[in-house]
Amino acid sequence: MLETSIIIVEDDLRLRAVVEMYMAKAGYNNLGAFESGTAALQFLAGRAATAKIPDVAIIDIHLQDDMDGIETARQMSERYRVAVIFITGLDDQKTIDRAFCIKPMAYLLKPFTRAQLQLTITAALYQARLEKRLEETNKQLNREIEERLQLARSVDEITERERERLGQDLHDDLGQILTGLAIKAQVLKNSMAKAGVPEVATADEIVKLANQATSHVRDLSHLLFPLVLKNKGLGSALREMASYTEGHLGVACQARCESISELEGDPVLATNLYRIAQESITNAVRHGKASHIEITLLRTGDHVILRISDNGSGMKPGIGPGKGMGLQTMQYRAQLLNATLTLHHVPSGGTMVECVCPIRFTQAVVATDGGTGA
Ligand SMILES: Nc1ncnc2c1ncn2[C@@H]1O[C@H](COP(=O)(O)OP(=O)(O)OP(=O)(O)O)[C@@H](O)[C@H]1O
Ligand SMILES: [Mg+2]
Image 1 (spheres, rainbow, N blue to C red):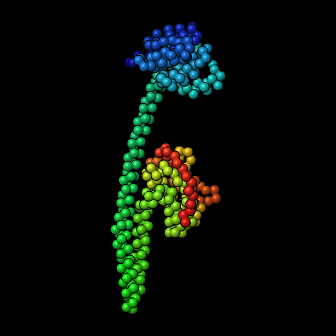
Image 2: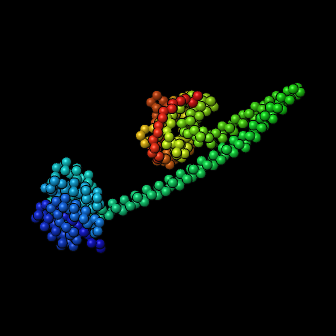
C-alpha cells in the first residue's frame, strides 16, 4: 500500500502532540506539524517544486493566526489540491457554512480517539481518490463530447458543401435548360399564333409550365445554396428570406438585423443560424398558420442572438421531439455552435424560437442596419 503523507496545522500544542502520536502509531508519514496556516503554506511552497505534496492536511478551523483554518484550507486545496480534514469543536452555523465551501473531505470532532482519527483519514483518502477519478472521467467525457461535436461539425460542413454543389448544378444546368425550353416554347407559341394554329392554347400552357418550372428551380437552388449568405452575410440573407416569405408564401415578414462582423469570418456559425431561421419560418407558416413573422438578429456582449417570432397558433402543449426532424435538427445545429435554442410561447399567441450563440471570433465591430423583408 502507498504510504499516506500528512501535515498538521494546529496551534494547540497539546492537541498537536496527540495527533502526531496517533499518526505515528497508525504508521502515517508525518511531513510536518505547523502552528499557523502561513507557516504551513510556506512549507508547501518550498516543497512544491521538488518533493511530494502531502495527501492530507489536518487543519484546525480556529487558528490564532491572521489566517484562520478555513482560509488556510482554501489556499491549500486550490494551489496544491491537498485533501483537507478539519479539526473542529461545536461551531456556529456561519463557520460551518464557510468551512463547507472549501469542500473538506472530512471533519474530526474534538475530542477524538486514535481509531476515529484513523477512520477519518481513511475516509478522506477514499473520498479524495473517488473525486479524482470522477474528475478524470469527466475530463475524458468532455474530450469525447468535443471530439464528437468536431466530427458532427465536419459532417455538417460536408452536407453544406453538397447542398451548395446541388444548388449550383440545379441553377446552372437544369435552370439553363428550362430557361431555353421556356424561350423556345414562347417562340413556338408566337409562330403558332401567327399561323392561326388551333393548338396555340396548348402551346401557351407549355410556356406557362416551363416558366413555372424555371422559377421553382431557381427558388430551390437559392434555398439549397443561399449565395447571398456567402456574398453579403447573414443579415442580408435573412432579409432576402423575409422577402421570399412575403413574396412566395404570402406571409408578412420583417427582418431586423444588426450587421455583425464576426459572422463574416465564421461561415459555419452564419450557415447554421440561417438554417435555423429557415426551419423556424417553415414551421411558423406550416403549423402555426402565422400571418406575421419577425426575424431579429442582434449582438449582446459575446453572443449573437437570433429570434424568429410568429403570431400563429402557438405550439400545442406537450409537443416534443416527435416524428418531425425540424426541431431536432435545430437543436443539433445549436449544439454544434455551443449555443442554446429555446422555444417560447408568445403571450399574445404564437411561438418564438430563440438561439443564443457565443461568438467564436473576438474582433468586435457592430453596426446597426435595420430593414424589412420588402
Ligand atoms: N411555429 C410553430 N407553431 C406551431 N407549432 C409548431 C411550430 N413549430 C413547431 N411546431 C410543432 O412542433 C412539431 C414539430 O416540429 P418539427 O419541425 O420538428 O417537425 P415537422 O415540421 O412536423 O416536420 P419536419 O420539420 O421534419 O418537416 C410540429 O409538428 C408542430 O406541431
Ligand atoms: Mg418542421
